[in-house]
Length: 118
Length: 113
Image (cartoon, rainbow over all chains, first blue to last red; front, side, top):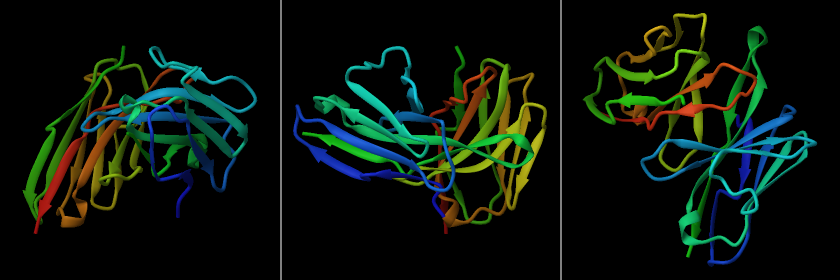
């Protein structure tokens, strides 16, 4: 079954509005989660690292005031796209590392959120 | 800066054929490498994870190899089926404390019945 969930799966909004996307780890705690963005026929690009209890770490070129990240609990991170514009239309995917066998951790990805800004 | 390249970008094969997908990365200082499957409009499903100290991993009809020194990995799919049709993504986790991944653009596989 799903290990990481995202909500909503699809959202269409008008230009200038804000959109909140939730990422939840379903049966494990995640002190760190990752937010990626994927444009058509492009690879996933890391936007930011969400850290529980502290500020998110943003990748170069990602506007932290536009993409607000809040790691509210050990199982929930939210990404808010503020004042969204058509160029923000994309597929947003979150991931969370979960302990696997041998002491390592495996990244599990959410199902993604398709954002369309009109 | 780590860069990941996947070749070919697209591949179409008849059902039953064995095939190989290629992934190369520019910096051999990696912690691990992971292969994912992505269906259209969906998230990612992890297929195989190879630690930097390992040479290969197998799961069912899938076999992934890793040659860290040459910066290459291959994903071998045996006896392909139409249900294998998807985009296959390769991602490396660079060495260091962060668990963030660097992805290739993927190979879109179509298996024709």
